[in-house]
Image (cartoon, rainbow, N blue to C red; front, side, top):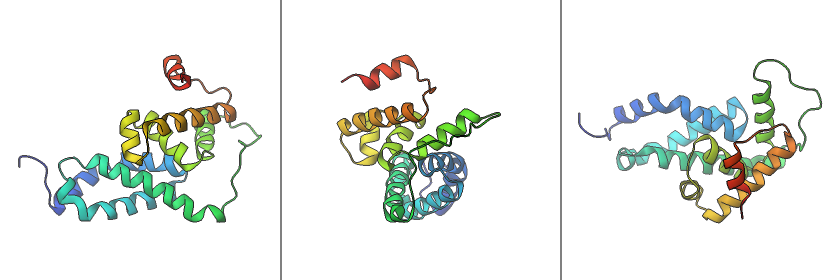
Length: 172
């Protein structure tokens, strides 16, 4: 078959190929494996009706749904949750300890900051692509990234970023 498959089978093939990546991104956005599963499921349900139209390049559309739904879900339930601004006092030890601490710090960011950080630095999108996914301006992406990285540095003082990336983020 030449070109993308706009059928149900094409959608299922794409989901099979991209599910793990979508789950990783959703986990970074939500900070919880169960919430990540739910987020991916809702995202894919929203993408199904649009599949014939987006089959040629579904990634940007699905990523946009994922990020927006994550923020919406957080807004709907934030009144039920108690946010913490601190990383636990007890040090996390063992393999992957830095990763756990960073995930906890990431989870403490505001949803838009978290979405910008995940899309920019995990998904490796440009500022312009991130702005398009979140329907915000490039300036907002820059300020959210700066503030989010600053907050991560506050929460995890030992966090090391690439010096070029760090300088680009701090530059006015």
